[in-house]
Image 1 (spheres, rainbow, N blue to C red):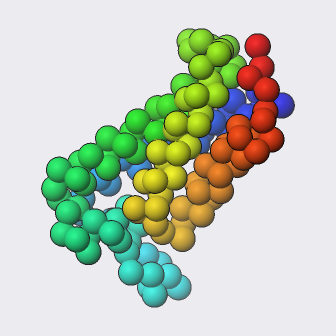
Image 2 (image 1 turned 180 degrees about the vertical axis):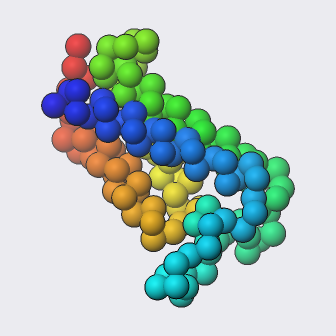
Length: 137
């Protein structure tokens, strides 16, 4: 179980970190497929920042840093859980911080395709807080 969760944290972290590229080079995102044309923002475009005119500002770049930090924290949590490169005792803190920051980013960049990422963050937080998953030596 520890290996599966560690691997999933690493994968989720890489996917989260990749989202930062849209914040550093805002271009309107990837156009939605026709069946999703009702949604107000393209994939990779922040519905909130674009409405406030902040996508190409310091705030937009800061969101890119937050995406990257969340992803790196999740990757580090997975590595720590697996006992590789990161002290094992830090994995819970890194997973919680990464999931919280990632969840914040998912809200600012809300898109139906992000449902899996949001569920992954909520699962991490549930395991850490709700189920009091042990820190595993």
